Length: 371
Ligand code: SAH
Image (tube, rainbow, N blue to C red; front, side, top):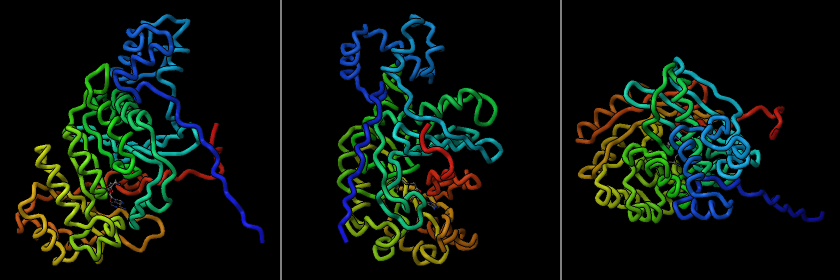
């Protein structure tokens, strides 16, 4: 039998976009397009301040040139496939098709005191955590900086138009807890963080502490982040207090173990002055035993942390499920007894497969994959 060779089709990169660029890049873009710099600033104002890339909204630009300038500076990156809401219209999951047909999701959640978007940093994920829906399909590709930022701008636009919860509200928080491992797409994510926090018209002007980057614990990248001078909130997906179990729940633990991950996070906390979060999905009879709560408290004692317990969102085909309420309560009680700050995450978005770890961009096969 002859051996088959598969050659991956060469997929063009996403179109270059304003949100990919720092100040130097924008100056260069103006030169390349033979546009005065103030024209780029006008478009940036529409994009970062008014959350629009629609040429019809840009009435301060000459009508004849608007479309061409928009195509060159803020081309469409995310084509909306569908938006579904739940939780009494306060949660909206948005499914996007990228220029090469790849699908990604983001989730907008409105709370009494804040409005949060949970965004994807990669299409798929290569970390292979067995309880996570995204992990099951593997990594398709990294997202570009602008593909990441544009999810946030789209969420801000949706919130601004009253599309989540009825009345207009400003986006306040961003969490990198959608599809992908943000620190495995390090360069694009760092540039995205700068765009999200730079003041308008250079960026969205969000506060750094209202942005959370969640990681499986890629130690060298946590160390790099520590040196960036970008004090965002760090979340570490621990899910087990012992290496034996964590090796199976978060396979990258075989490369960097719990002590190494916690030490790197501690150094980040010292440098940034911000406490970090420990994410812990409670899985029935797997990681929710009382002794594991005690061990977790013991390992976290004296560290600048806060534990976020997430009731497991069961993924299709998995035998694992959420802990019994009594076990969850006991787990919380033991952590508190051990002097550890702990909260239990709400399970927003569950009925639309938009809850933690459920983002898998499922889409009926009979739909056209590109338009
Ligand atoms: N790669 C990053 C972001 C992933 S999603 C990370 O691992 O941190 C954000 C959080 O949701 C992570 O803590 C992840 O472990 C958790 N998660 C994944 N699948 C889940 C599920 N089925 N139920 C509950 N939480 C889950």
